[in-house]
Image (cartoon, rainbow, N blue to C red; front, side, top):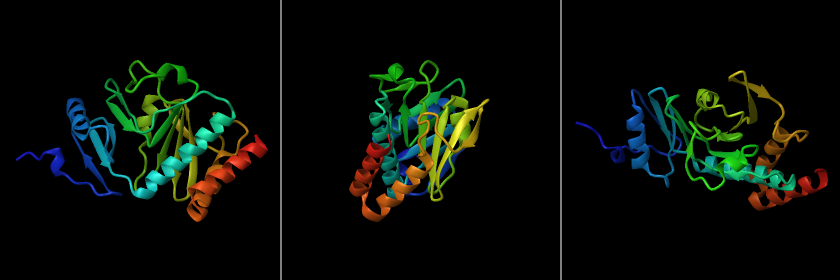
Length: 212
């Protein structure tokens, strides 16, 4: 007896791993899941992970994304935010949904696009993953050529830069040269948890005004 996808329930903070999933099966699953859904997917060479984020995961994603937007706007850098868009490359048999992502240098290439095909479109310049219950699989992003990956964990922000096809940990962001990104993100996420989003955002904007 075959199970229908809608019969399977993945609770927040949990994940389900499926093996031997073909590319066509992946396409069918994505279509059945739809675009307005809580679940995130990660696919690599037949392995499909379906994960449902915890509420705090979503809060951190939105807040860190807001900090990035504030910095880019202050620096007057054009950008496009594609949120948790599904990035797919059939030739590489890879697909992944970042928690949020930014096109910065390649901003002009994706203006007006709702779907991204990495066989013809560039990858995002910056992808952000919030890891609370699971570890992001770097190989998806490495193979797709995402130059900068941020991973936020309970221990704080980690910056990973793509060098010769592999991620290397770094203490700076090429997208924000001279700005102490790790310290800022860690500090203001803590503030968000203690005094709330509104006060933390105001404090961050004040720091940006006084320091940039």
